[in-house]
Length: 388
Length: 186
Image 1 (cartoon, rainbow over the protein chains, first blue to last red):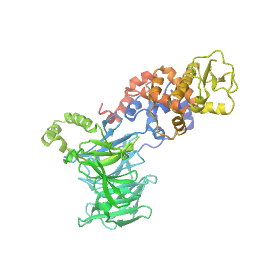
Image 2: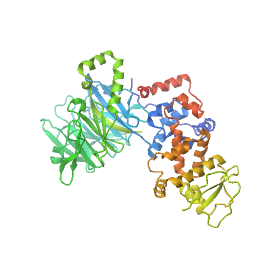
Image 3: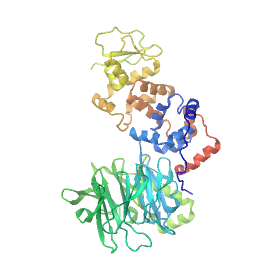
Image 4: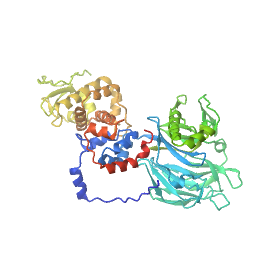
């Protein structure tokens, strides 16, 4: 029901009809030339955009096109929202967006049905506003080649070309706005996968890259210093690490202090590598290139707890700050230039309000959460930031 | 620099021209004269800066036929307030880098300045700022108009800005469905 493949062809309008329209159509804002009306409209916060689109057809057209959003970006008013994918205890995937400006959680159109219960799928952002889901394992149909993406500007899902290979529990990353995937598993094949491929959105196609030295089911990955680092388990369930250099299209195995001391969640932020140093993310470590060691970066001295609810699920970059997101949907923002200035957002409390509302809709869900305890209900599987 | 703090009132009688004045006289479309600090005008308006540098300033009042007296009074008022309230070094850097620099929130006095304007005066000021190449004033006025859309329903926005609803009932329902997910939390 929710797949909305991009089927609308760009109907070419004749020069005459466009001219006709501009002569007859009402101004965007009566009293102002259109270019100045647009200068006003692009400054309206993102949370109001659905309302603006319902004002009139011209506003809707304006807010459906890339021009509007490229102007927002140009004058520095584009807003970043956090997007969170969760899996509930029945295995169902849901996703939600957090607006940091208004401290509000927003509901989103359902994920495409292939992903409603998928396991081990990838998630990445290209061009700042397109969120991709790819591969993974559907409980009924098995491993997938499938690729879909969500356009945060239009609030719609679309299909993209399938990957060359079916895979799940693989690693993925974005380098130079190209999407890389490597390793993982594929149903029906005993070995873990060594193969890797890349998707270039400009060419709109997947291509193979060099295979890894060993098959691997990665459990952590990061792009740091222009290289893609992956750590995971090989066919013999042994920990193995490899690093990929895009410029030479070559993998090499690696076993230094960086990969051995590297823990989930981690992030490469402003060119430096950070890693959680406590389950709830109250402490962070940073990797020092010169000495080849991990050192303490931040200690908020505010340990939240070691339960799964407080577990730091992801580190992302949000509005120039390092952002820690936990399973209970709490978000802490850390200013890396002054880590003592970390800010706890109101996200967890706002989330509870949203979650409670959702529970009222379903008595069963409410009952379950009472029995199981609210916090055990679900955990975060992917976290991304999209700019609009 | 000593700045003439003209309050922007119309000055029907022109002051005696001095060889090296530190103000310029501007003439609105309806013939009213306003005096503004030359330094502030050159700093805040690319168009006035060009005219001052190019010597096309008329001591009898430089004709600005596109700008009515109310809007011009506000422009002059803004220039004088600006000259008084912000260190010029910070201002120069912000006006130079405006096009690529991220938007800077209006300052308190700028907020007050646009808040007291009527709907029409605000719109006229947007056009005047645009015509005179006053990036910061354009920024502040457009921001104010955008704020007038916040927290309003489509109906309220149409009413405030006098926009005709050109959706049919069915079309509006269709688009409401399409956007339904975004309204979930309301």
